[in-house]
Length: 255
Image 1 (tube, rainbow, N blue to C red):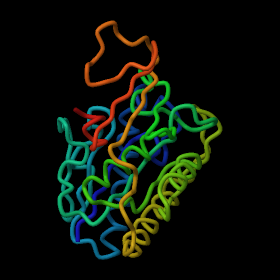
Image 2 (image 1 turned 90 degrees about the horizontal axis):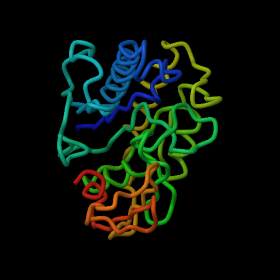
Image 3 (image 1 turned 90 degrees about the vertical axis):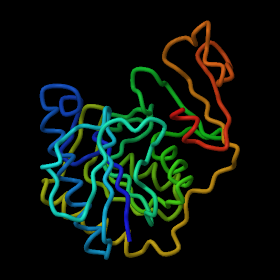
Image 4 (image 1 turned 180 degrees about the vertical axis):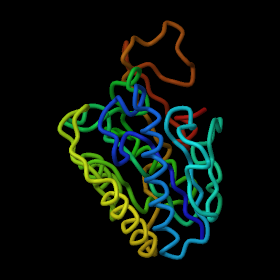
């Protein structure tokens, strides 16, 4: 059995604000990310997984080194994978969304945004406001993978339960604002992640990929005005809003 782990950075234990993402503590943020991944891998193996495919999923996809991960029963995907959100996911029994954050505009959520905090104001999937949790669950369904577990702050976990019926969640911190978070000691957070991953993998039987209506429509409200020569694949709704419809959410997002 193989399990896929896609890890973002903002929702990892120990990451409190922007300083750990793109400022003076960025290297430390990468170490926190790797530590959460190690705990998650251990939990998957505890539950009988034979291999874990890990995707470094934040920004450029190169946030730590291979040497930061422990053990022998994993493979790591880093760097660009053009047009492919979950590279290496073939044959995986499910996916864990590790270190995720709440969607753009979520009140009091640590580092809330939807894919690009400088470009996207809001996003909708089939008319429902969506963030990276819902979008990635929809893309994972195209690989036949149910989302087994989502980890992050209290707001991200609540969003996961709203979007993904029956999903396991693991809260590693409580947020007060985009830049203010109350965190557990790292050993406690890592123990919670390991236990949650093991439980989610053991209880994966009956879990189903997210069901959405297809063709799917993604609407994006940009921060800036729509260019005068917009991408012809998108329909322009107004001066800041475009949408695109396709049978594949991954195609809309990445191609």
